[in-house]
Length: 159
Image 1 (cartoon, helix red, strand yellow):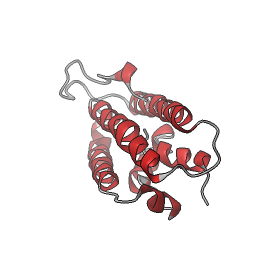
Image 2 (cartoon, rainbow, N blue to C red):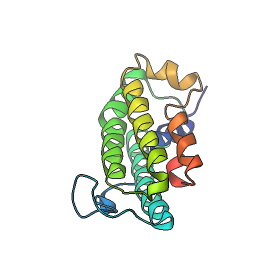
Image 3 (spheres, one colour):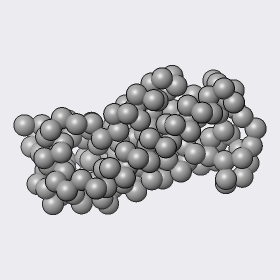
Image 4 (cartoon, helix red, strand yellow):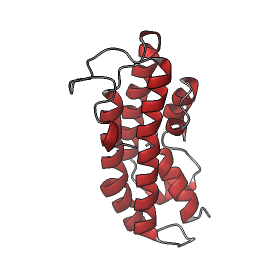
């Protein structure tokens, strides 16, 4: 059986793109629609990973608050509440913040693909009927998004 700690790691994987957030709400641009000058590759990676790192920390804290030091998989109702009330809103916010980043032009297509995959993975997560069964299956909810983040050279966003 998966432990809560393993579940929290799985939930943290939700961070696409995974999962850091508020301090860089308008990274790379001066307006809220993702406009602005493209960042350098180093700036892009730094800002995206900062958003994901903060989100990873937020999700770990939420998991600790919700489940404490338990080593057992949470009951389905608690798990469902955690995903719907904590994980989903944090991931939605993270995707929005990551979307504000303007990557270098040569990375734009890959960045758009990552954001689109993150949204697809999030929608799939929202449609899960039984979270206990899903997480016990060993599936990773944002596996494809994380792979795209790895391909872009993002470390914290690929966890």
